[in-house]
Length: 610
Image (cartoon, rainbow, N blue to C red):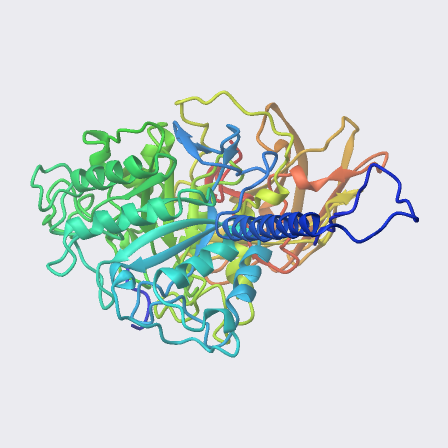
């Protein structure tokens, strides 16, 4: 989708094995002096040569850094079933951000007129993203082009560079600080999106040879993990139709195999099409079409087949109603219908263990309730932890006209509201356990949690903040909640139950308290349920419900604050870091996709742990 507006060593050379005799002449004969000169010249040549080799080694290690064998994510990545693994066969998850600009007429990432590029990358890393998607245009590699939008007083290292040289600088420093990189061929030319992977000016042959050049160029840098072949194919692109000029599935195979012939360690990311099976299908008929590049229904019968196994990842993009009013946004069951929509277009690939899925773009300005509901639902659908669906948020740039960015418009400060939505699904490798045992890869899908189902006329949102701050070691757990009626009809609170999922960590008895509730603590019931068998990050939940006398919650109203807590009778500690519903970053009220809400026993908000 088009989102932009447009240590030195000392050497001991005198190490005699015989003592110096003071009565001997110290003046060597002429021949000996000549030999000494030859030896000294030789040593000088060796020293210069050693320094040169050392410099070359340092240069290579800068551009092509190696990661330590113990670091999660180290080395080349591969796939098995729906999981991505590192070189040590440990599961990894892409959780990153897009930084756009190389695909535009500026021919460099945006924001460098305001800030230093290393500062920007350091800030991305500090927010705990592990991957950077870098869109580019083939025009970047044309001769006689020049970048714009760089303040060289802030980016002196970039002065005089262009094209691949500039890309190298971003890749070099991102790799150095531990960010993995996915290169995304976003456009053939720099001015507009193209539905097909080629144009008259940039034919398929150029598309493939540029990819092979990049695969060879970054072959020794394992931090560059792969190629997103072409951004958002759409009609007239088809999937599996057999026309070599239009069949994106076949083109992806040709390009993927050509890349792997040069660099067999790269992952090949293949996006979908817009409509299937007919690329010109009626978009007003449900099930025909999705977002550009996001219809992967054809994989069920026409999967991409690469000549190197365990290298394929399918990719999609997803956006809210503020970008385009897709049919599913008009469904009265929205947002509870979204999981089934995603399942039908691409989620089945992940859930059936066919291949990993990567949501390469999703983003929003969060300026309306529907956008917030969409993002809450998508974050919940992607899931937490290493087995969740891979993703990169669009975008880092605030100049993305329709979505804005993770940076505010000043290009300096983080949009904390967006960051808070993404916080539960981040997966920073430097905080992942280095002691995790490599699992035996399996093609079978992971367990999935139930999706919310609609209750006629009722739509709600739940907001949460942690009364314990960021925790995580506490002797009592203190969730604080607000329930909002976003539907069009009054909500009888006596039909509502809320579940907070957690692990008590020990077997002591527990007790619950209501500290404050706007409806009155006399209207709040609480009890703790132990799960058998336990679930992921939860072997218990506290259930909160309302008495029949609580009354109705009118459309647009909220319950006000409900502050409750629970503790062990011996006041021993909980470790909230392994609690499903806990979010250390919710120190102010945020939407709570991991605390579930039910109306008459039907799940209507959030997702249960698997």
